[in-house]
Length: 158
Image (cartoon, rainbow, N blue to C red; front, top):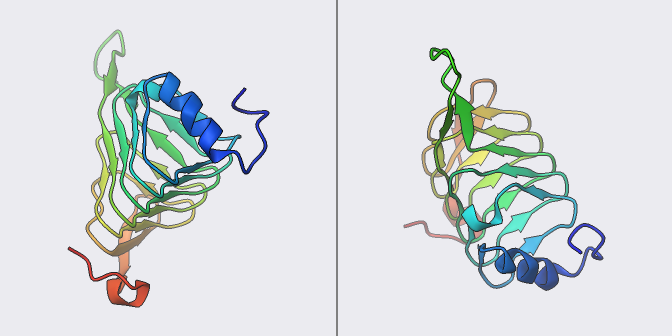
């Protein structure tokens, strides 16, 4: 009922996710070909976009704040394994995507990472640590390449 829904039926997909425990704010645009592993661990505030092909692997909580964007084929990976233990136990940590942040296409956010307000993770970049407010990060691992100007976006910051 989620995947075959027509692209404009964002409210329908939000309703379905809420049925499985997700907290979804108003005007969320969640597209039909995204993958959300554990809806009960997803919190989306108002005016959030999750594009087709985005994967949210969330055995721990993933929070996406207001006006944040998760672009096509982005991957939010909320777990890994302890490679130093003989049985490779799973290690789960939350991911937080701040207000006005953008995870660009094919970018990867690892477990325990926070993108602070306005941060941008560029195409194909990998966030292994927290990204500071209004910074633009690129590369593997992601490195700060410049600052965004919040006023240019009609936003004054906090």
